[in-house]
Length: 324
Image 1 (cartoon, helix red, strand yellow):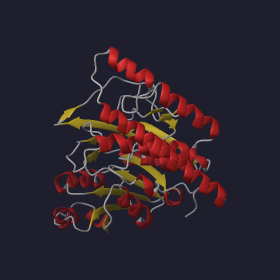
Image 2: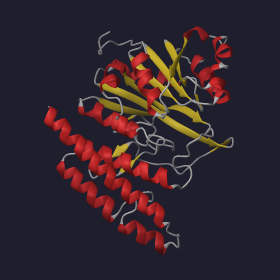
Image 3: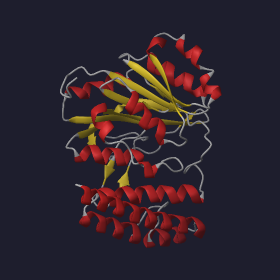
């Protein structure tokens, strides 16, 4: 099927691990869409027996015949993503987290943008629930923006004041879609597959942007995220490994994709200003003035992560340049 055709086939992929109760809700929400997908891939670990035991019940759901179960052996967050892209039969692949529940018009809203052949990806809002309570953080004016000097503003879990679809630099991994032909060429880098594979969506989006395609964020394409427990805490708790790999991955991606001027801008920004999880001098002073205690072990992790990631990203960029 040509990338410019108006009615592509849609494959929804749900990577899952040890969450059969949550998975059932996610699958039901996809099968009840106003625009029914052409297939639904449940990508699971081969040794996840609890999830495998739930498959018969899922197949008995209305439209259960659309389900395909794909197994992976390699641990980590990214192998199910790679496997889904390589195994889907659709023209557009749509990712949904296994602890999410799509609103009924979710897929229909995402699909309408693909009539434009210049659109490479479309995503929507993540509405967070913790312990069953909906979270309503303050509304925002900016979403999915990567500034030239490396500051990234996600905000795709917050109410978006403009209220209309906009072009963005990146999407949220649990509510995003890409043309399969592009996704196969732009899979997230293997080096990012540590901890919870922080920022893998940014790596994928920047690769697609470089190919000249635009990415759309529609705040009306909503999924409810029920925040299930997981083995690896990532940044849900303050821990050295999470801080290190969050900084490593982001720094790697910036150095891998940015030109020299933008790299220098990022170095200046992260060293002088920074973010709370990646503090520069100004952020550290601000935290001290606010009476916030500084955990120097975590600060050390953030610095080491940025330095190690930058070195790896520059090495990757040089290897790419020498091979092209």
